[in-house]
Image 1 (spheres, helix red, strand yellow):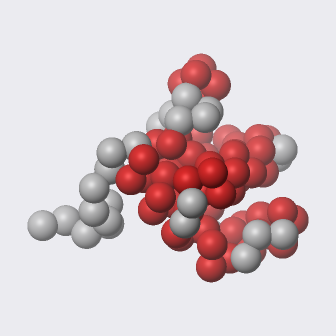
Image 2 (cartoon, rainbow, N blue to C red):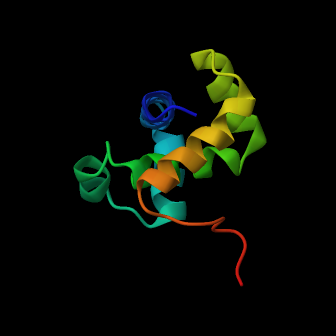
Length: 97
């Protein structure tokens, strides 16, 4: 996936979370990210990858996000992977060796 498209999807995901206090609060709680850190790193590939990773953990929220933004659900994982690679994360974080 092209990096511009991945960033666009990530930013859309962050705006989706920020548009609902319950969703945003859950993201902050689950990730341990504070509001100041979120503001400071809101455009960083690592933060955007974390946003998409968070959305992927709840299928119903993911589908609402995709439907509201007109994003095919199958584009989320490639976007997350591209953002993680841009952030220097290597490999699949869910697979430990």
